[in-house]
Image (cartoon, rainbow, N blue to C red):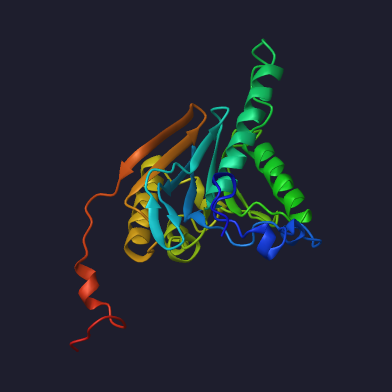
Length: 266
């Protein structure tokens, strides 16, 4: 080994020959992220007669490790919409910066009169914009590994809720969920809002209570979830966002009736 200070630890050139740096070069194609490392789990959302409620826990998991416990995965836009992020946290941060730039552009391009002062990008427009961005990145074979929920109001002031995934696939429903929530929380929400007609009879209190119940079920059954969460309610009055909510009245009494793992006595 070469122990001179300027080349400490390198093989000696007079013994092994000069280092061939071409080994560090590749002639293959550029490669992008194929498996996200730090991820967020479920995002839940539901319409009610005056708006939309959306929630997500504050956990970002490093693989299977509950590593980061204060990651906010709900982002407001122009005080009229909320975007919930599931999936890769680094891509979420990229989209967050992109939305910040977009919001600044929106603020500068708005007029001064009352008719012009409304944001030009409502929830429906924002959802279409993000879906096109996701599809564009997918088409470049460098997708953003996220599943988004966009909640807010449309052009007519009606509640709007839609989803977009990393492939640019979009769909809308009275209730939506990502991750494990699509399997564990959707049945609970669909009992309350099975179709669009049922939305008109649902109050804000009913929708918020249903979302809280779904988050509790996910905390019980999803190993990548947390009991601290963020919850936002979007109405014509604006966005009410609370980022430090905690689950209450938890009970693990059901656990001793679950069979199929651990030491069994029956």
